[in-house]
Structures are given as C-alpha cells and as structure tokens.
Length: 191
Image (cartoon, rainbow, N blue to C red; front, top):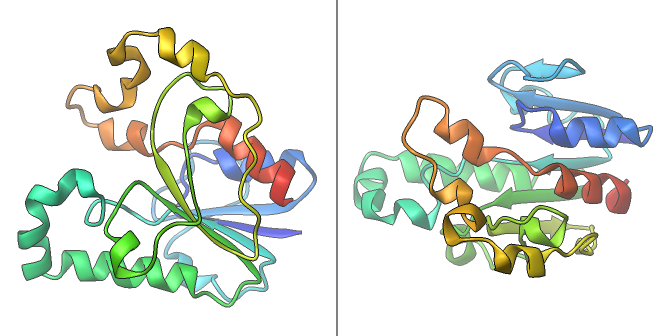
C-alpha cells in the first residue's frame, strides 16, 4: 500500500508502516529526523501522486484551543484561516483513506467533531496528550495496551509531562511527536 504521512518530520508513523511492508513516505517542510523515504517540501506538491492512505498532521499552532488567548489576533491577520484552509485541504484530498490528527481545536466547530479522541495511555505510554482523529474510510483505532492504571499512579507533572515542558528552542517539536504505540496501532490496524 502507498502511504503518505503528511507533515511528519520525525519518521515515526512512516517507519511503523514501512516495518509492516508498506511503501510509506513522510513529507514535511523540515528534513526528516530519521533516515528513510522523505519528501522535504510542501505536501501539496505530492498530494495527487496516487496514495492509498494519508495520515496527516497539519500544524495546530493557529487552531489548538490551548492558544485561544491569541485567536483574535490570528483571525485578524489571517493565520487562523490559513490553518483552517490547510486542514481542509488535507481532509478533502483525493485519497481513498485519510486520517487527519490534531489536538483539541477549533476544527470541531468549524468543520465537524472528530471521529475519535485518543490518549497515549491507550497505546502503552503512561502520559496524556488528547489527540483528535478525523477519519475518512478508516475505522476508529482500537486501544492496544491500556496503561491508564499506571498513568493514574504517576504524579501529575509526569502524567502530563508534555504540558509541563519548559520553554525551549525545540519544545514545539517535542510536543508534536507521535507516540510510537499510536504509530504502530495505525500501521497494524489501517495497513
């Protein structure tokens, strides 16, 4: 199967599909962090190249409700509309199967509610990072290793480690990573 992993620099989802024998390519404006098939550039350049499935991670910077304090400014200067338009290009792409993921964001009201909301602890990682999935011709992900009981025992700053990251040059990168357990579930269940 030809798999496009849009807006992924890490290679995590791409590599999970490759491991299962698929022809997977990641694409991002950034270079890949992990050697493997990667198109560095605008995903729209390769969007119509005959993909069977696309897992898209469009930027959430101007859409996520965690940044609601800046929404008025982002609406006024067009950044939010640009984010909405790009998200819609991904979900409406001419690809048979699509997953678009984002955190809790305005797309729930601008477009529609997500088909599923997942947490890392449903896939073997004792952390929280609420992730919304909008699906086209794909089933909801079935949790593979629910470790919520382990998660519940951890102090809040460890359970929500991703939210407590101190400001740094690469904080945005660390917060955007897909957990390997989720990537593996996507490859196994959708591949």
